[in-house]
Image (cartoon, rainbow, N blue to C red; front, side, top):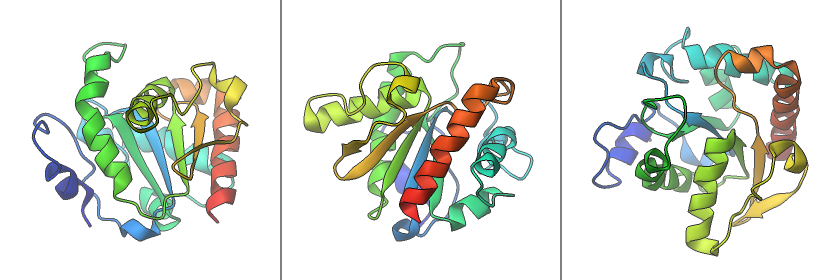
Length: 197
């Protein structure tokens, strides 16, 4: 199944949005890591090629977690899919709520493609906010408490039988500079990996 093709079928409103041009076997995906927002250049996204900017920070996080990950295909082959909550580049440094809302139906559809999902990791506050918008539609409340990530990292949160794990943003050079957040995100990814394997 091609993710881009499936999401383009999801309905109107996809103009200007970027979907991952990757083939997956849906029932072999056990974890989805939701990053915040797509980069300006699609070639810098997770599936944009071996030198993609997003991979320069994501792969070291997986390696920090003790997971064999030299390429995005290594990650996929272990049942882990990476995506972005907001499917268009942000025009300014913050992500406006309207951008999240525009992408939300497609993120929701994307998550529904994987019947054997065990873990959803929310990599950053935008991912957390987007996921809570999805959970409010079904459960009428936030799945993830609106508190600092460090306070709830080890809390067992479930939504529709899936473990929800809030963590830190996995892209951008800041994650490599902020050693404590890098280490914590690596720990969280390691915990996710133990759940799915």
